[in-house]
Image (tube, rainbow, N blue to C red):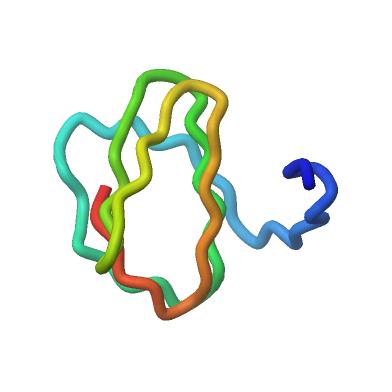
Length: 67
């Protein structure tokens, strides 16, 4: 499946420039994080995801994460 096939309803979109660690945060809605440039690591309770340019991650509400 491609990201375009998911047909998400996007309530809010923003461009963030992260230079320091953010979090931990707990979501109250589903999230889609897309990396325009650079790289980052998103740490969840049981695993980590490496984001690089043009990659994305989605996760459910109630998920605790740190970028």
